[in-house]
Length: 274
Image (cartoon, rainbow, N blue to C red; front, side, top):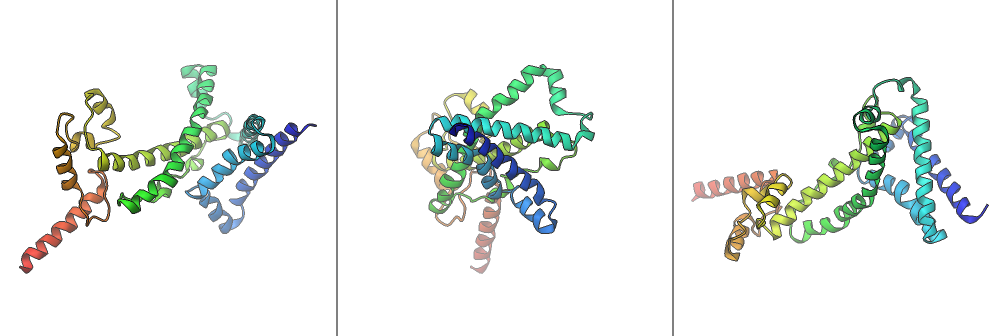
């Protein structure tokens, strides 16, 4: 066999054995379950997904150059299908029960549904870029300008493996949605702080304001109108932020009510003392 074939089978074996070890962890008593649970929450989930999704590409690219990208992709697809087959085989008693992919195939069409599901994998690099930004770009802002920090494990985690009846094909796609929803939601929350801190100005397009207000509530709550002046912007910023704040969150953030209550209590105590 030539080198690309060796790399292909080697990566498939590495991935299959590794996922087998992850499954084995939950059967190794309390310590094993704790380790298994750790891999379900950030930063454990980041390391696990990087191992299964990114490391094969890095190994193959180093060994085979650009050709290695295709080899790694094929190896990951093979390992994924082997896991799906094995997981469904070991849960064959549930095979005739309700399934998401069967139901959606009836609704949308069999090949249309499956093709659409696989097309969503093209977004995986996008979610990884967002995740890297959450890990590398946002944290310095919490130190430099006191944007609020987040317990990322509350957002970046997977738990749908605990839902009864999710097997094989259904389970792997639900875990994918589980991960990407948390990544996107945390990124959006971080961006709310960034936008309201530096650019609290409504868009000239009312349709854009309408479309974005769900993810950026401050658009309708406090951002200045598109025909306002720079003085209006600076007055808004001065009214929302000060040098004593411990966290400078977007205007509708829950931590603001706590800070305002504390500030009010301090002001009342000062008034009483005087």
